[in-house]
Amino acid sequence: MFRGKKILITGGTGSLGTALTSRLLNEGVDTIRIFSRNENKQIMMESKFKDDRLRFLLGDIRDYSRLVRAMEDIDIVFHAAALKHVPIIEYNPFEAIKTNVIGSQNVIDACLEENIPKAVAVGTDKAVSPLNTYGATKLLMEKLFVTANNYLDPKKHPTVFIALRYGNVVGSSGSVIPKFVEMLKTKKKITITDLNMSRFSITMNEALDFILKSAEIGKGSEIFIPKLKSYSIKDVKDAMYELLGNYGEEIIGIRPGEKLHESLINNEEMRTSWEYENLYLITNPLFPLFHPNVINETYSGIKKIENMNSYSSDNVEKISNDGLKEIIQNYIDMQNE
Figure 1: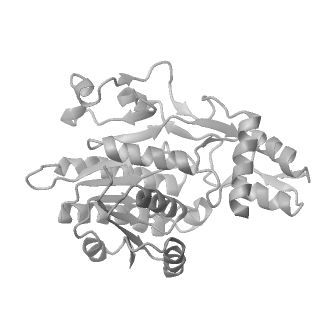
Figure 2: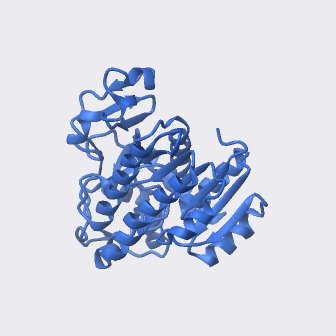
Figure 3: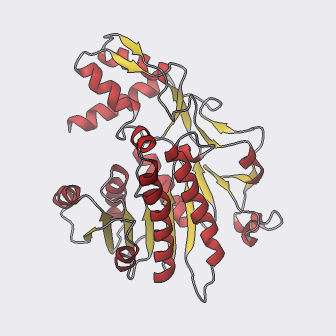
């Protein structure tokens, strides 16, 4: 699907954008336009890849006219630009609204203006029953992308809009593994919010596989969700101690805006959720392709999710101790390269 295509990635200098760029270059794309605000990261990324298929565009998704210019002749838009650090956003909520909500609507409007064939919004588990401002803004981003398919008309606006949800990528900035590794390498005691806290786990390669598959099969208005395992903070702590030593710990309590457990599908969403291969889908039953009578024609072999009231990090299979140690060691090895 991606060979010979022209791609735009908003927020393309972030950890996901950089990894997605590498994967898409290997898929044989024609061009990737990196759209971001950070000129220093663009310079670093250009130096890292040294690939003439890359184009670097300074811009902010709050600027609609700049987005329209950036999307000229593009085939697929991956929308990954966002403000995402929960404590900072709790202190600056309207800035998050301007980027994550209004900026996302700008992306949608620019896609419609330029008749982009497909647009993929990268979301988060924080959007499910949100407790913090970040989650609330990403929920609104999802809603905007899903309902943008109301404009879907091949004669006027052919753009297919889909949204994605998944958990924290292992090793991403601000996540627990990098924090614990940094503390233990300097022989400091680790700070823990709550030992019972659990989170979904997805590696970067798993996230990329999920993103590209969803982009390939999406018909419009779906929210795609991967099937994932989870871990507790206690499990991560124990695995860390086995690998890097035990220098003590301090319980600091859950921070404002944090949840004890994360969900990817809540109880109410289960009514319109389906299982398809290694994915779950939340569909819009008002969209003709997903009417219960015809959804099997849209996705052959799809079935309703059974025996699960919600899809939460505390009610799915946990990663084993050996599995966690392998994930942690792989992260350490990558940092040492």
